[in-house]
Image (tube, rainbow, N blue to C red; front, side, top):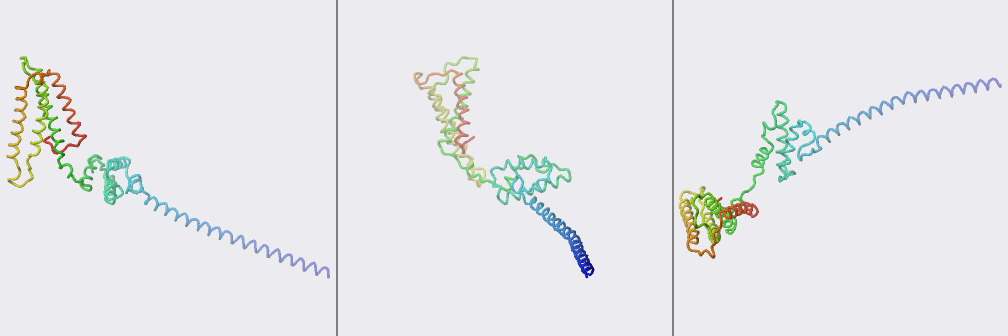
Length: 285
């Protein structure tokens, strides 16, 4: 009886050990399969991630608006610098607009194609400054109405007074200084003042009667221009001559040639400065 029990217990223990070995073997066989599935899944995720990175790289903008990073990286360093210089000089252009992006993309594509045949950016588009000028003229034309609109009459008169008056003063001072025969009469202070004032009115009269080359035949105004110009110059010379001849020396003291040269030079410089500051337009010169 005891032997039978021992035999039964031994057989049960063997069966339990066999079942345990079978279960562990099954788990060991299943684990590699699961690991392979996990590696395979990780491999698929890695591929998707790479595709996502590629998409992000294509969609990511470079430092130039409208150019994606992938396109920018296809260019040589020189072409990149060229495009950056062009973009920098177009600072007044709306760089978020579709026109700018289309233009800058076209240039980038042309530069990339030119790289394959050895064509440089300068050969294709000229210097960056020349390229910018072409872009502005063709794609971003600006209205020049303001440039053709003349300034107020007093500005035109002031510009003419300083220009014509300084020329006369400089020429007179230079002629007096280089003259070998001493002159008894020179230019007095009052004469100089009248010179500048009348010169301003004369230049204003001429500026208001400039010819119109683009006007229809018979309306160009050349005869009127020549007539008014002649009248203005005669009036100016006559006024200066009359003051020089008849003004008493007490109110018209004679100025030395050096003083005339200094005054003429100062007023000439002032003319260009004032013209720029006041943005004077519509004058004769």
